[in-house]
Length: 269
Image (cartoon, rainbow, N blue to C red; front, side, top):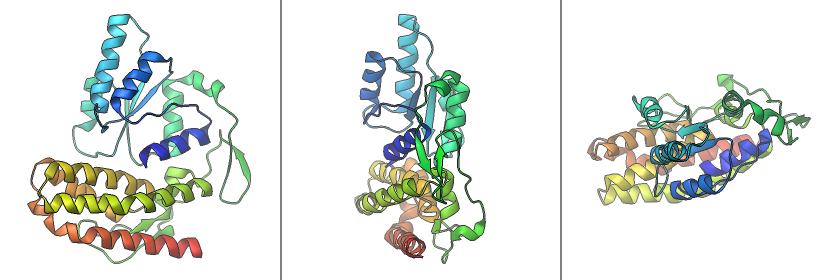
């Protein structure tokens, strides 16, 4: 889900990129190719973004390579994450969900020459008018655009579905919005099942990983309340204790259904 979003954002901005499945493959790609920048998720299989960055910096030192900008992508809002990113050698850490404008600004700041290398990708704004990728369509910020339903445990006061939040990620691109939400709808129920299974098995590590995956995808798709719930679960699971959040297990599918209902209502309207 996260890879698909980043791929779409980069495509819409006109940047070429190679995307791999884990940190080990990312290190291999770095060593075998020439890149202008590395975008890395902090949480990856086999080798996380912190270890990947440390290894890249070690390679640069040992082989006298030019320092490459490294940007961290993280769904963690915990205190100390930014400092941890800097300590391992990352240049910038961006919090998910990442907007198209934020990503473009970061790339151009760290790699100004990228501006002249962009493809002339054409995207449609919400009115159907064609805009070059160098333009960023405005995203609505009005709370009236949020579909707000009754509050639930762990996400009280937040929207089950917030279209303004989603548009911040996609830049208001209707095609990207449809693809992103479609992928979220397809992939989230199995992840919720995995999280519930982890609760039942009292497996805090598995619960943390599943909650992290759902949280990032939910925030990117505007499912704020489900994202908040999973963030609460993830933080508790990180401490190895699922007891305080056990009651949230029964709200997961319910909150997803609320998101689905709100999305379908807006799409059909």
